[in-house]
Image (cartoon, rainbow, N blue to C red; front, top):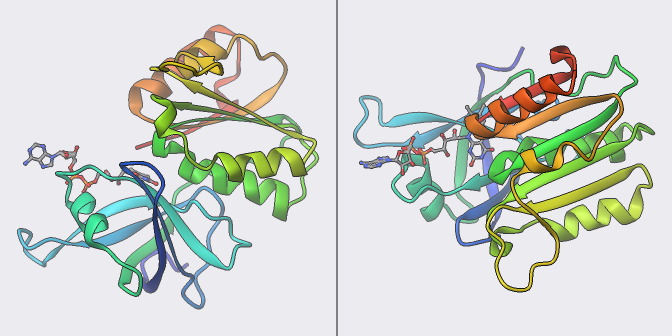
Length: 234
Ligand SMILES: Cc1cc2nc3c(=O)[nH]c(=O)nc-3n(C[C@H](O)[C@H](O)[C@H](O)COP(=O)(O)OP(=O)(O)OC[C@H]3O[C@@H](n4cnc5c(N)ncnc54)[C@H](O)[C@@H]3O)c2cc1C
């Protein structure tokens, strides 16, 4: 068990994908192992707290077979971690504990995998999808429904398109709840696009509490067994 060990990692790259969505790539400390979908707890420097740090949870957006770790973080300007991430730079050291969490793919079912993410909720989900396709070489059908607000919020499109062109068993949809101008893709919240899909799936949801609640409610009404619905709330 390594979940209480403090790990130190070097920031290799920090990329602002949109105005408030940043992807941090950092080195994988020797001996650190995790399952796709798990999260770690960062030590966030904080002068106001007694021991000078506060803990914040961040999902691993990388897959265990990747050389480095990555995180996908929505920066909250007034947030303690938000301020830390804003000033964080290449070469800095990140300290974290973990991994933790059970938001991982159930390997004991033949059901196809249906992932639903909103915003930074894509973090654990992209790691799980890459793990299934690239690492485990699954032949299960995998679908991703990714909800964002505006067209400018879209990120990782190239990464997702690459999966689409490489794996026949992968498909995805991006839906915008506040599309503007020329957007001719899917519109509306993820909840508006669940009725298009039938069949037996294991569902993996990640995003805000209202999204997870609403999606679970709809899936329940559709007769989906609650045991087939896995979720992580940010
Ligand atoms: C299991 C798990 C995994 C997670 N994974 C991710 C992930 O992969 N990516 C991700 O982006 N998030 C993730 N989160 C959420 C993350 O842990 C943080 O909660 C989030 O990043 C906000 O942290 P913060 O320190 O920046 O904000 P906090 O300091 O906790 O502030 C929270 C909110 O309060 C507001 N606030 C703070 N101070 C004030 C003030 N004085 N006046 C008014 N408003 C104020 C902030 O703007 C912010 O909106 C995860 C959470 C969990 C539980």
